[in-house]
Image (cartoon, rainbow, N blue to C red; front, side):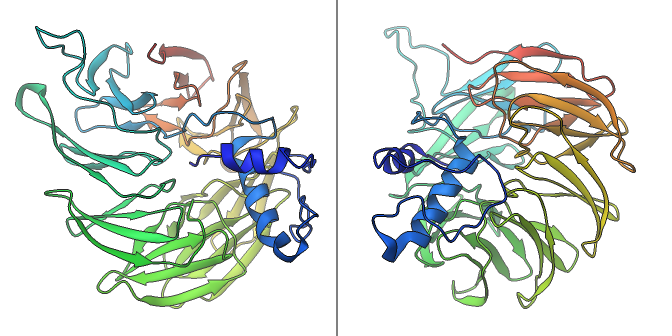
Length: 404
């Protein structure tokens, strides 16, 4: 969910070598040794960029907004920076496109314009309304009208970069920025209602609303904040919890994956740490809570099954080159489906984590959490290809290619 080019340049221009991606090492030693007085923050940002961008060289970020299912059954996917497409989940045929693909009689150009920038934040759905927020801080409301007509009643500029998926609550859109702000946008007219400060560091993980509070991680400050929705003031703060993971609710607890190779359960009411489970690599993706079990993947290539109080039940480790799990696992057709960043897909027994099937999709990178629809699992690659996977067997096929 974020743009990494500037951080990669920062690292590589100094001739530094980073540790293998996702390995469980100490974060205190900075790869940039020339400036020791801020080495810890640099290390934190650098390692986080490697988690999310991969360990290759400098590359343009393409965005990894995951697929979402609309009320009419269509699947909405990003097809290129600033553009989304609603496709039929069976055939992959396009049902509609934003910006509007209908061309004016006197022009060869589209009537509407793309959103500025690429998407890391997932689309936010509210019945027939869709809210799109790009990395560059451009917000657009897209409406599905009668007869399938597509409307775009307003757009807004936040003046800040956005990685985390916004939260819709009480008729307002709460957007966390890389600068540590919470920008509150009115959903009827796109007006900026207020701006709250949630620290001075980056927010890359998605927030949740718990009671009267908005809970959000702050990477650079290594903290989790609870911000009151009523006045934007801090209700509580938990330190020593650097995270790029989305926050997940689990009853009275909030689950937070950490780049210190751990999963924490935090008391939603007061912010105290209930328990901490150590993994074999950074936890960059959100966990899945299913019944009385928590499933979580690590960048070390393992999937864990935990009890709700943080005790390990089972563990599966992928035997593959550069095995890394960033996407949240999903359950479909009686299987726990885990997808590695390099396109290895495994179907596991949810009770034992024994491997039932394994498939590989060559030459892809997958960071977004899959979407489950009627026993089928939909994957989006970082190059915006949509792939459908049969959850029972792992058989897969491309159903929607990126736009040219």
